Length: 400
Ligand SMILES: Nc1ncnc2c1ncn2[C@@H]1O[C@H](COP(=O)(O)OP(=O)(O)OP(=O)(O)O)[C@@H](O)[C@H]1O
View 1 (cartoon, rainbow, N blue to C red):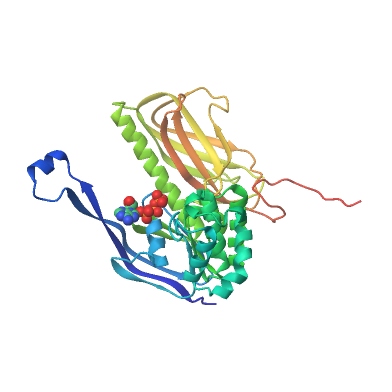
View 2 (view 1 turned 45 degrees about the vertical axis):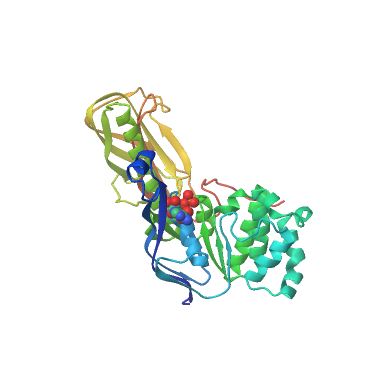
């Protein structure tokens, strides 16, 4: 079934003008000119996005990549500098704290104003009012001015309004994270109900587990551009790889700043071998409980006297299921020099059917990182599905 497009973002760019105070010297030299520099800053560049009805989309990316700005453009509280945004259906948005509610008005007054902006009549709001207050759990404070609310109370009321106005499209910015655990769970349950009702949800979050759990699509932003748009798994993989690359760059910059010249040791090849002993290409499939060999080649410029190799099995989203190192296995520190080969022979992997990844690490015995490959290989485990969770346990059921 082809689902209609309900959010269409076409060639959208957003420019902010940033004002920077001039230094005292600049002001003295240029006395007649204004005391501020103005600079253009493009928070979004050429963004194209079509979201179909019923989709749950996660907008992810590093800090400052433009996620909240994109959500504000979709919600209409901000206009694009270039391009256009089109919507079909009633929209409710939970944006950054402070947007939407008037601080000097009470919770009750804000519920009426907010819900009427979102398209409900006075009678409809009267009908939903008790349910909204009940969902928010802040009945005691409903006649208090919202400027005295804690951020969690604020979000509770805002979320309660948003989900009671019967929206076709729900936009949620990171705000949910400020609610306490029981309230977050309640919100996520409500989001699940929204999904099964076939409503459209766009979620900005740094909670990558939430994206894995809820979203059928992930859009990755970086410096205002869409760098990946696909399944949640593809998006998360791309983002994690980027975070890892940034982390490694920062670590090497920190080393440079310290004037340290660490020996350069790298993985130059990694292969997964199954019981057959052959290299089975990049994505082998093994039966549950069977062995896997991780073979690796390293190359070292100079010499490392105390190398430690590590291997981990992770889920595709990076959760570690198993991890070991040469030290943990009782091996003495490795002398790394030139090109060398090593292997870890994992004699039995009791995993349930699914997809998994292998991470490899190379450090010194003091813990300094030499090279990490977050996804050095991927493999699948096949077999009958008789349980949930990653570990395969042979279980027999008997009735008496
Ligand atoms: N009103 C504004 N005026 C000037 N610059 C702004 C404005 N709003 C956002 N920006 C800038 O635009 C960029 C993108 O901001 P945005 O809040 O969309 O990022 P984000 O991906 O949501 O970040 P985070 O993960 O930190 O919430 C940032 O560099 C931010 O400083």
